[in-house]
Length: 276
Ligand code: BTN
Image (cartoon, rainbow, N blue to C red; front, side):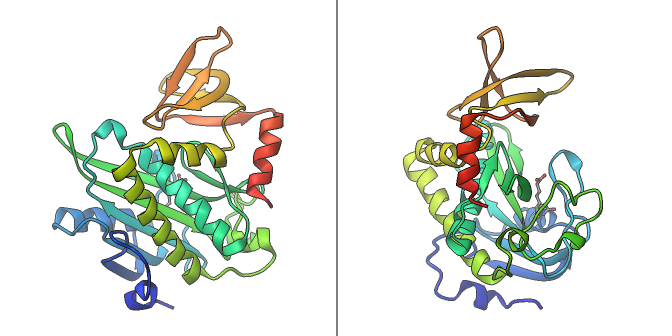
């Protein structure tokens, strides 16, 4: 079933996100559609939504399973007056909005694994893919892609994913309204984008810290050509992860694959945040 844009937008309190909405039965990737619209001059806040993606993408070129009718596969176009160095904040913005939307609809906030994983019951229930187009020192546009596994059963995931992925339905034990979740997601994205522009990154970072499952944990960081371990201690003002090495030195990590290791009192407390 393909929703009409008006069904999604009706009565929504949004200023920017989703004010123009393109809904497709299927596309390769909603991020690609949004980038195409961006090149054609689409206004900021334009959103693309698909029932199914046949070439859904995750970070680091990974495939993102996006079957019909089970999830939310959407991308939003931003033209932020920010520098390219501040763009990683958008992954965090997407995560906070997704977690809060899930919290509002199911009663259980999702946890966030830095930088872009939406976690429920210690498994991945969603992901964020922010893709940036620059023009010299400026951001010409940024596409924020969000994928949420909503009504999958275990069998809806490929075998390789079953142990690592979950859906809101699997965690809640009942179906979750995708329409309601999508509407709340756009409102949350709109809210946090507005706050980011008006107040700077501090409130967003503060909120992310409360939802983040990575801080306080021992992590293994696989960067370009090197691997190291340390304790994730904070976020930088640009949303990077600050890791304390065994030597006591601090390292700031931007785009890397972070694996959580061991557990800690913090981790158990964060588990409660996820609430599943
Ligand atoms: C990740 O966890 O690696 C990011 C996953 C992002 C998936 C979403 S689904 C909507 C948008 N379109 C894509 O092709 N990817 C993102």
